[in-house]
Every structure is written in structure tokens, then in C-alpha cells.
Image 1 (cartoon, one colour):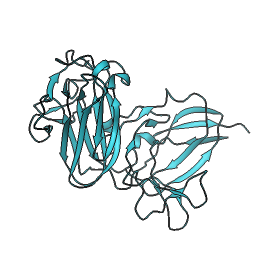
Image 2 (image 1 turned 90 degrees about the vertical axis):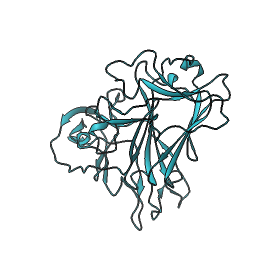
Image 3 (image 1 turned 180 degrees about the vertical axis):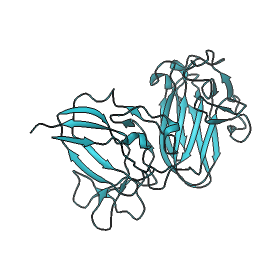
Image 4 (image 1 turned 45 degrees about the vertical axis):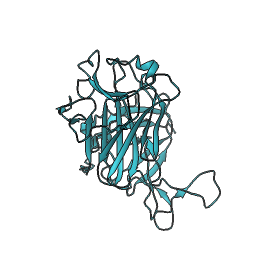
Length: 318
């Protein structure tokens, strides 16, 4: 007997009907669990009618640049030296931030925009970004390499990043997480209240002559309740907790994306997403032994159609 399993994204939101709580992605889905012993990737032809999403806010900042330019994927980036997105620094700050170019330009496969320039500082600086209220993706782009007048980033670039009331990164060093000559992107979800998002970069006080740096910033709107629990939702039962205990992901929570995997399919680049510029990795590095799988029928916006055009076929001999 052969069973089909569609790929899924690891980030889940929860929604429940009036009486019986159930897991949900945005509106509703059917969740069936299958158990398998062997697997085979096969193509599937179907029309999933995935609807494009047009974000209210689609902000891309090329830090350390004074011009606007396009990246290899033709996405437009705005330099932070043009005034609108220039960083804010304390008036009594003696160590003003610097806009610097990388000593060695990124390889052609990476592209100069937005990774050939960076904003660096030995003291705190803030990006105050005008936008609409609501849930947002925040993506911080780092290309840890040598920059003029700044020491080896692997030894000195330790810093904190705050987004409003949330500390997104603590004593963070991009060199310790990045693959050489490959940009590192840290992605978060947070709910913005008001008309501005303040991103604060602070060098670590525990490291002498530490500095903070950033190559690029993205802020992109997402559909309401894509990952967060609606206010009218009571939540879902939390396994292992006392009966009646319900779990919600409220707007007072910040989320970090760890893995987003296209099971059985190809890598999906941000330009191929439904409008939120997410990316999916292949499952090659993660699939070792066939495990229980999940079959999802998902509503619009959740993922681009390419995620569903290939499935993981696993056979169970009975």
C-alpha cells in the first residue's frame, strides 16, 4: 500500500472552532497521520489555487549604502544613507556609526547588493522604520567579513538586537553561525503596535571594543493570524498539561524561524513565494530515516504552489 504525504512548513498557528479546539493554518486544514517505512519522491500534478499575497509593508534597507539598487533577484533595496531610513544615534555619542564597504567583495553568486556594504558602530544605533501596525516578518541580513577600520568580526562583532520590547539577538556573533562567503539571514515574526518599528543595535558590554553591524533589513507584512492565534480563539489543548489548559500564540510573542523545509521538492527562493519573500530549503540535509508524516490540505497564502507540486511517497508493507 502506498500513501502520499504533502510537504509542510514548520511554523504553525492555531485556530479553533466554537467548541472543539483543533490545530489550524490560517483558516482550516485537514490533518491525517500516516506511518511509513520507505520513501520515494514523486511528482504530483494538481492545481492548488494558491493566491498571491500583496503585503502592505515591503521594506528593504541596504545598510551602509547611499544609493538605491537591485539585487540579483531584481528586488529593489533602498540605501540607509538617503535620509528616510538613516539610523538614529544619541547626540552625545562620540562613536558615530560608519557606512563601510567589505574589504573583499562578495562572490558573484551572492551579489554586491545588499552585501557589499554594512552599517557598523562601536556604540548603540537605531533604525526607526515607519510602517503600519500588525504582524510583520523581520529579516536581518549579515555578511560577516572584514570592513575598513573594524577588527576581525569573529572576535569583536558581538551585539544585541531589539525590536520594540523584544530582544531578538543576545550577545550575537554572525561569524559563529554563518557559512564562509554565504550571507546569514535571521528571520523573526513580531506584532507591531503603532506606526513605527524601532530596531536597536547595541554592542556587547562584555567584550572590549565590541561593535554591532548589519548589512540589510527587511520588514514585510503578513496576513493576520497566519502564525498568531486570533483574539476570539480560546487556544488548543497543550499535551501533558492539566485538563483545560489551552495554548495560544498571542501578539505579545515574538517568533524565530529555525527551519523551513520543502519536503520532497526543490529549493524555493524568496521571489517564488506567495508575496512574503520566504525561502524553503530542500529536505536532503534533514531526511535520514523515514518517520511518521503529516498530510495537509492548506488554504491560500500559506506556501507557494511549488511546495505542493512534489510529494514524499512512502510505502508500508502489510
